[in-house]
Length: 474
Length: 115
Image (cartoon, rainbow over all chains, first blue to last red; front, side):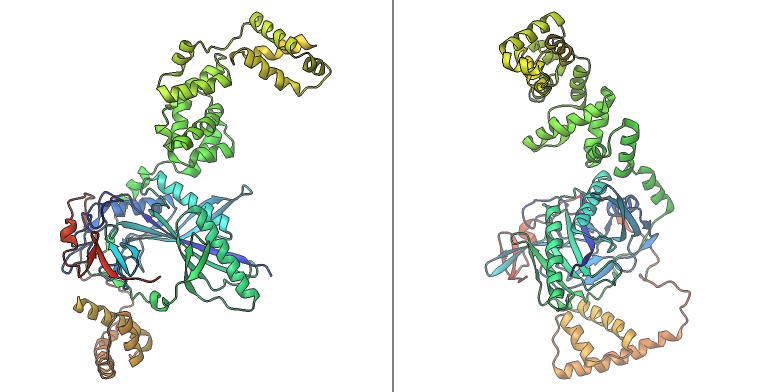
């Protein structure tokens, strides 16, 4: 029997503030253990948390970017549980009155259609510390305690592991655009829990769900959901029942396992935190942030397609990271050939980014230099092959492309007489191929163009060579 | 700390009783488990009794009509107290773990947490 999965995601996003949420300790990642801690985040008695204003700003920005309603009055609550990574034995969170509600994002499915995924709520909370498990003991580092988090909860609108991944990637892109988080899943600045259930068909009521924790990469989100889906199918097909429980995903084995002994874990005894007063937002505060909002990926994609005549695929690529779009527009401003600029970014530049493991603006080639290379091709001054050589030289030396072309004598040869001599020479050197080509074997065109390029050291202008080749073989 | 635990224990109890109206001994033991408190039989009986009395007293509040009144989440009439996002010096690692009964490599050492 086949089933349809029903998936909802809870995503925790660490905000990239300078200081922690309720104290002035540094919020930077990777410090020596227990060096970014103070009486507040250590949970000492008698301390008073004071809310970081940036945390409110960032969460409202996220709410607006994710089409949420912003609640004018929201309240902090204590979530009570005992665990060694939580020194106060409660986490300050929001419960009944979260700051953002009722949002959505649109994701692109593989068949090119769009699907709207509801966002139930976004609330503010503090992160817990980090446990290092050793033989016989656990060691607690509380640097992460009090890192500001927003928890973004989706509606159970996702119907496959692929949709879940697409949702996560879209979410990450949007949050990067508004610069509220690094969204680095591997470093833990974006973490995801998945609620997964299955049902016989899309009209059946939702089945009992399992909550999958500990998923730390986009690929693992897909793997964990697919595994969990299969596991639940097997249970049902064997006549069993799904138990509502928390399961831990193991990236090494690819399976999820029940976290036993957590039956009481969901009895958190929330109550309003008496140490913190409610947040009341003025209309002006929200309006100013709306005003501030940059162009988001969906709008940018539409504009790139209409303004630059790019395909949906090209536009998708360019909006997938904010910097790509910036780089692209800067290059197009310098030389107006959007399609060619986009191809160079997706091809040579991305190859270099992969090799060097750097960002687009660190690759050694400025948007203006890339534009100049495309311009040199468009003006017929260099060939595509030479252009790749110029690209590498520019990236390595930082010199500008025209300079390199002039210095190295790389200018394309468009002189008909000179090129005719080269074409003749190539034809003479390959009599058998010449006969076949004359006999109508059209695919040899590529072979001859290649040979001519080689003979001219890559400098022959293909636009001049092609008619010459035709003339001399007809 | 002890006081805090008892207060949250009471608050939870009040929540439970909104539903069940009275606290049973089972409720008391369940909440005690969540709060990591251990009561013997006699204590549990006494708490059940005490809490029912307290709740009976608090129940008097139900005589008031609160239909059009927004729930109070804080006793003070002030809102949105924030500070600028500015990082300042933290404690030294030595000071941070000074109170730890056991420590290792600058971290708090606790009994192994099994997941």
